[in-house]
Length: 80
Length: 146
Image (cartoon, rainbow over all chains, first blue to last red; front, side, top):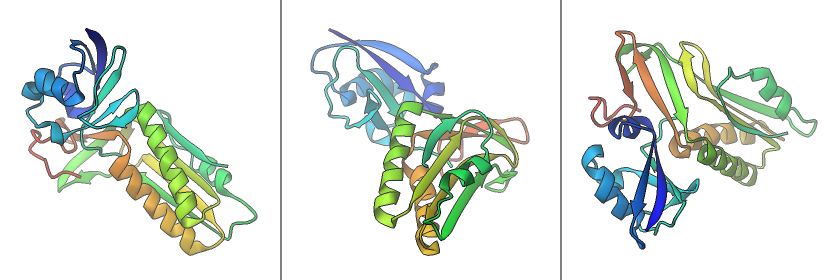
């Protein structure tokens, strides 16, 4: 088992009722797996609606997560 | 010198100008993004910005390197503010210097366009009627907001 932290921003943080959650995952779990298991129902959008990062670097939904990783769920950006 | 930074204090335009001035430069271009009093036809009283700072500054640094490579600019300043901003306040500053004006103007435009499309920063509209909505929130009734 691995412990990971997930950061949420913008409306994703509102829907998840918090900016940060911790999850315990099975070995081999990908970002996409975690999203579908823990977030899709609350965020009400498919995985393709978001970008992701792991340890502050862009990551594909197919990336496998490891103990201690910090994942971010990144809605469409709107800076400027 | 170059500046790439997310900050929660007001943006100092003079700091940006001082950073890009260079005797080799014949042109400086500066873009300021400011908080507007209306969005999509609805009165607004301000914006709240948040960023994923670690990744945002990393992505802005990449954009800085792209501008230098693609437009041959001498110096690049990109500063984005986060937190609560009132109408008229500066949310973002992009400033570049180059040997010639076309390079500077094109690089400045590319800089703000790339910040807007790639850097993990989000804005929440604070409507004049007291309601709020994140831009691009599909459930805010303003999914087309941008």
